[in-house]
Length: 399
Image (cartoon, rainbow, N blue to C red):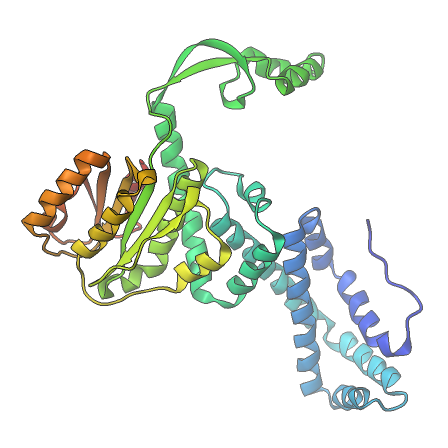
């Protein structure tokens, strides 16, 4: 459907029509409209960005053009013939500085596309190409609320970019792990596209047999490799203990991108996710059932930073409280810190006893150059990394 402007509009809407006509004939707009087809979120973001840009351009022109400024003032005051004067003044401004408006619209297009991608980075899954399908599960109102925040919150925008990068690493690690964990065990019928036999792919490629292939695929009758996994089904929940002491402040945005990537794994695998930020004290665990997070919660996660010193017993106690819930049996705990703290013998003894009862495991991600002594007493595995940008980080996604 191609939008068209009405030829006859009331005189007081003459300026509006003139601006709309200028925007709708701009090549950048035409290209961007193709990008937004069947995409309500991109269209809504683009509409907002374009509206803000046009209004900003008009205000800038009014500061430079006295005739336009006076005409707009008369229009606001409701004077007779002010509409036509404003339309004429705007026409002159467009003829003189229309190229500037085009440049501003091009920038608005870039910002709209970036905002859409950032929304996908935060709300989308870890699987490549799954972003748009994941967004469809979230009400458009919430997507737009997040888009608005992303447009004006520099920190949230930075977290979104790191979340996108971390999800790429997580997806790569999970795919590698899945591939290593699967053995081919004969042939069966099904519709798992990744396990289809080469002959079936040949059927799809041939115009003669393509229709028959699509029918059999839709009915789950195509031939595929039968796979037998080495991994256990029904994985346990994920608990993230994330250091937010003063020394972690420089890595706050990237650490939250890391947290969102872990949460995406939990969501994809339908595992409960608990987040425990800590410094010299620990916040109560925030639990996201099956890794699902509301937009408001996500914004809260992005803005919280505790600061202060480092205490390991506090977050581990909070983790213990979570683990004692029946739904948190066999949990995977990811403990992230760049510090060192003393953990007393009595606590470690109780921790070991709880581990035997509940069957959980702890992977500690130690950033920087601190000694492993602080974490080795309660950890099953320790991964050292200079920062979140270190390749070693990928091991944290091996859960």
